[in-house]
Each structure stands twice: as C-alpha cells, then as structure tokens.
Image 1 (cartoon, helix red, strand yellow):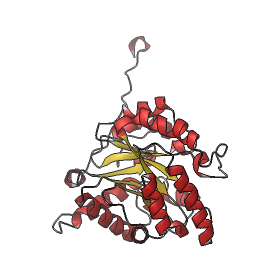
Image 2: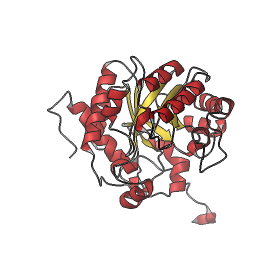
Image 3: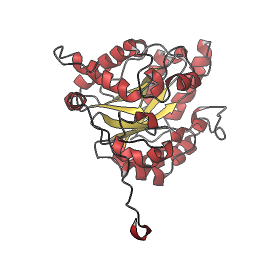
Image 4: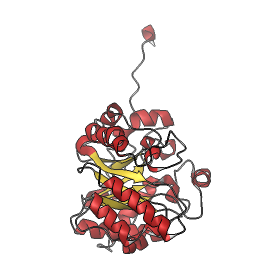
Length: 319
C-alpha cells in the first residue's frame, strides 16, 4: 500500500438478522426487555456478530453492535461482580447504547459473600454499598440503569433458624439503602423463600430475582412461594442448566453457538410470567446465560417465540 498507509478497520458490526426474528422482536410488548449475561463471546458470529472477533475486541467494541440487535434491549454487566464499578467505565457503556436500552449490573461478590473468592469481604456493609456500588451505578448509567442485582452465593442453609437469620441481615441492609434504583435480590437457597423474605423485600424496596439454577425451585415454584409484588418490575435470570456446574457447562457448550440442552419447562414458565407481567403494565427484565441451554441468543429467540405464541397460535416458528 502506497506510503505504508492503512485503511482504518471498521468496528465489529451486527450480523444479518432473520426477518422472522426481527418481526418477533417488534411484536414483543415494549415493557419486556430480553438480554444476555455479558456480550463478549466470539462464538456468536452469525448470531450477533458479523465477523470473527476476539473476546477482548468484543468486550471493547461489541456493545454498540449488540445494542442494535432488535431483540437485545438489555444486558447483564458481569465484571462488576469481581470488582466494584467505576463511573468512567459505566458511562462509557451507557454512551454506546440507545436511550431505551437498559443494563442489569451485578454488585461485587465482596458485598454479598462472607468468604469471597475475589477481594476482601465487605458483607452487607451499607457505606461500601452506597459509595462503591450504588453511587457509580446511578451516576455512570443514569437512566439506562435497570436492575442492580445482589446475587448471594449458595450458603447451604439447612435450618429455618439459619434462613431467618440471613433474612434479617438482608432486611436490615436493604432498609438503609437509598431509594431510587431497582434492587433485585437473587438467592441460591430455597429455605429463604418464606413470608419473612417477602416482607423483607417489600420493606426494603427490592424485588426477588426469579432464576433458573440447580439449587433453586423452578421460576413458577419461586413465584408461588414469593409472588411478584403488585406493580413492581419483574426481574429474571436464566442461568445454569440442571445437573451441571458452571465449569462443566462451559466445557459442554463452548463456543456457545448452538442449543445443546433445551429446557422447554423453563422457557414456558418464563414466557407465562413475562406475558402476565407485561399485561399488567409492569417492566420486565430477563437475562439469559450461555450455560442455560448452550447459546443465550438462541435461548432468547425461542423465548420470544414462546411469549408471542401464547397469544397467536398462527405465527410461523423459528424451528
């Protein structure tokens, strides 16, 4: 090339979208926001990305393309689980997405675990939560901030008394947090799902996050034990297929470009919950992980189909 000049490399873009998928995305109630748990997966070439890219390139450049996908109107920020967020990083993310896009941000592990694998434990420290998590979340993401998720790891609760003690700790923590953000609480111990848990969330201005995880009952079973609060947003996370660890699922599902273990029960339960909540004019967020069925973009496409099929049995399917 003359003079050694180079043509600037264009950033990663959005893959061509199946017109049927685009049509379904347009038909979904606008209150329903579907998204994936992070976005920097090279195996999504052809599903989300228009070209082969590295994980680091996608982490740096992929969000703008991701947010232009008609079905993907929110995303989970996972890296904040390993270290507290910075206003600068969050603001940079917010600048890359449209006004109607939303982020679900995970609070740091140090805040929700007594024995974190990453960093020193600051278990339920209110000042740390306000200064290091909530303030950056609000300032950096602004109106594009969706749920702020407190994901508690499995504690191994085996007695009701231990569950009651945990609920009391979480309740005291929540009542001291500033109101404004949407606080979503995810637990991995089924003994927590009690009337006391419902009251702790209500008093603290938080909602239960309905999840698919081997340690928990199904989403609808969770909803029966802990009914969604009237008028409150619905927050859901479809995380890990039953009978597997995260490491096992990664080995089984990489590069996350196809469905490996379909989970029609969870799909149908979430479809029912989302359709009902949207019909009640409640905001809905569902984040899907690659470890749920093998490929979260495909999981979400089939979930959208299931939601719409509940009211339109003549619609052509993606299968």
